[in-house]
Length: 419
Ligand code: SAM
Image 1 (tube, rainbow, N blue to C red):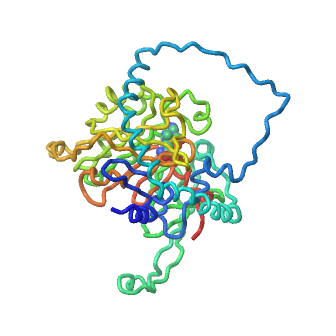
Image 2 (tube, rainbow, N blue to C red; image 1 turned 90 degrees about the vertical axis):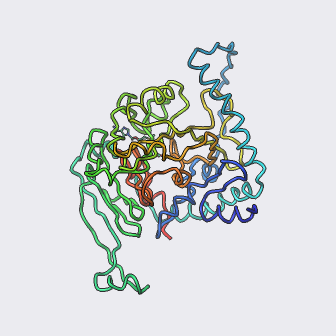
Image 3 (cartoon, rainbow, N blue to C red; image 1 turned 90 degrees about the horizontal axis):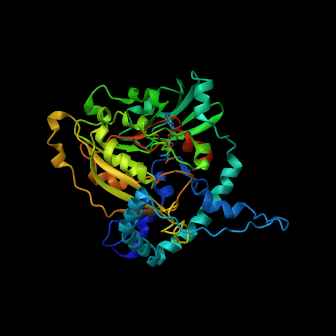
């Protein structure tokens, strides 16, 4: 395909495939926008780091501040775990370098990045004028007001014109409001339009045909479907892994690894099986926990690892590729959950995955993962369209069930612009 055609496709879909490789560049804003009818995701709020320089002024450093002398540290020998991590990185390095070279050679795509900022800047102004919502901490709210309710505003066809739905474009719509428990309750937008959930004067945009269940891990079993053929074909998991970063601690609570062993992956799996996609950080201890304990506890067989390489808007990596504790990439470990016993021969039917997939994008807010479900479609077993669930979600996608203690976090209207 011609570069210009690929670029046109990218503008529509948010996905740019590089020739002859399993390397893609994605724009999460364009991908997410396909989930909404009357709203668009604001690039300036999705990419806060990228837009920071537009709004913030640099504070000059105080001339009285004495510069601390950098002490020279002698290089420390790597311990056994660090050595494994080092070798893992060395093995992966050529693939990442090659993927990054593809991006740097793609002048048209790099030019398109430059326009992100000007496109986003106008929506930033709009957002400033029309949205005043505050950030709500759902974890605290759940503790203080477990009985809290929300108002769900759906746009549904007026009953008299309902029969015309199929043949007439002039169907009239009306607002339908329902008061529902905000926590420990499945909130459903079964319309083909955006819905708005209102909690304590804050507004949250729900994409079409989506659900969320906001609860603590203790209630996750309420997501298990009564019948396995109503289970899920894609199970995305982004656990709150423990991390030494103080920054992370202030963003959301974390949990010790053993808590994830009892996630009901088997019970959430569709009869025909599921693709399980698990985000992991680069800590070697975590990788070996997943490989040796977690997948076995879930009954999941390893399939492959995809790599998310984080770049800046000028195409450069967000940090040095070889920086030991701040690698510019994270991994998505994929495996198959077999489904019902009578379908045990499923394993041989699951499509094999290659280890050479690299996904590049400009990162959003802290720990926000890019929406990559489109890239997994061909590997998802069972019914089409597949039934998808995200565990520990902070946002909701069209057609998905989002579960976690703050699945509405990035649905706040502050992240959107009205069309
Ligand atoms: N995938 C998300 C994204 O792209 O923005 C990031 C998820 S973040 C790594 C982990 C999430 O798990 C946080 O929203 C955190 O609040 C939530 N979490 C932490 N402890 C939890 C618990 N006990 N029950 C439910 N969710 C929890």
